[in-house]
Length: 260
Image 1: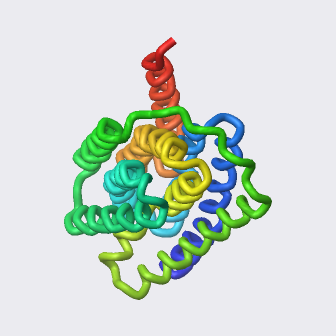
Image 2: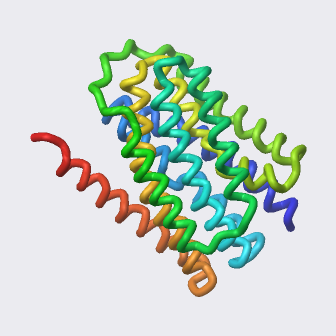
């Protein structure tokens, strides 16, 4: 059963992560880079993975996985902050340093189990801090039309990163498995391509949207963690409802803060 669950999770990631990257890229071209970031942060990949975990391994394991995902949002917020701050150095350096920071944070939080409420507090605090320290928003310039190979390249890069991380987790043991489980796969591809094609203002807008979207992601994970024992599969519907409500509230708040 565990082997079946692991294979199913990998297949889900191989399908959903590239699909998320392509869909968020297309949405960003129509509605702007902030929409791309917000979609990347929505639990489109993590939600089905947790659902498979619940079906295969039961509510106890799912609760622990949801709490681990909550803690992983601290690293994801740090990724957005570090990449945005280092964007002027180019995507290779920004991505490398951001990955090192993510792995360091994930390894620290994986050392000791944490209850759901402190994990939520850590995720929300990390998100607020990252938003406060990100570079100020500037209007992105007009980017050149993307080449025909852009979307396939993004999808292939995402799939390759999923395979690499999965293989590394199997080779390096359980501690790294937990650390790599929340690695910002889709966010890395989106951020790197956006920086290369649109420059730091565009990538910062994407990452600011992504980090803002982590409030909804945190709501989803927390709802699943605290409700899955009592509600079973219905906890996932509750999580989606909470995530959507939080995202709508965050979007409304951002609109109110924008100058007229």
